Image 1 (cartoon, rainbow, N blue to C red):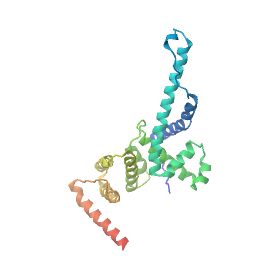
Image 2 (cartoon, rainbow, N blue to C red; image 1 turned 90 degrees about the vertical axis):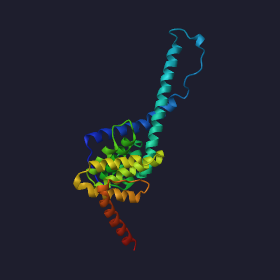
Image 3 (cartoon, rainbow, N blue to C red; image 1 turned 60 degrees about the vertical axis):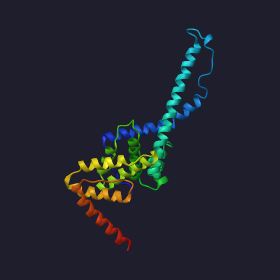
Amino acid sequence: MGQWIKLNKHEIHVKREVIHNLIKMDKSVYATFTETEDYIPSFSTSVIVVGDSSIKKVGKQFAALMKKLEAEEHYYKYSQLLAILEKYDCRLREIIEYRCFMNSNFENMVYKFYLDRRQIAYYFNTACLIIAYLDRNIDFSIIDYFNYYKRNHTLNYALNAVVKILLTEAEIKNLDTTKIFNFLAAELKNCKKEETNEFVSAVYRISYKHPEIKIKLKPQLEENYVGIKHKIEEKTKSSIL
């Protein structure tokens, strides 16, 4: 179940930006499609004279065409982002579409998804922040997303949440796992000394679950890594038996 996490000012800002972009995708693009079915009709330049109203008409038609193309590009871009969100968790896409496209309030969504208001708000916020990270025009990094989770969850949970979205993104975009390794390496370098063992443990669990991620640790951490690996493997064997 979702756990409530209060958004900070930056997260609130990017959430509003995502909502604006989703509403723009749903509303304006369809209006543009219907308003400019005929773009710029053919005409003979020989009959155009300075001040001719046909020049203004063509200018308006060209502006309408550019608006249509911009709307189509925005629609395609956000369709791709929603596809990644659905791959990550289809419920998140359902919740965000129900809220932004159907303009449903939280009371109705409680009955629709059989969740309470706080859970709906949690999933909606999470969906918005995932899209904010995926949209390169929004100032919200994977580190921001990681910090969002770290505020109210364990380090292991936060790391797994980040790795899951990075893996989903890599799969959809047909990328390798370099970005995941770079993220884990950077966070390991920056983590507090007292969190090192917990971090290494979480990293091993991630690599055990996702062998496609190539994990390399510094020599001084290998002993911790091997010890943790042995404990997890023993625990796994005993649970199977």
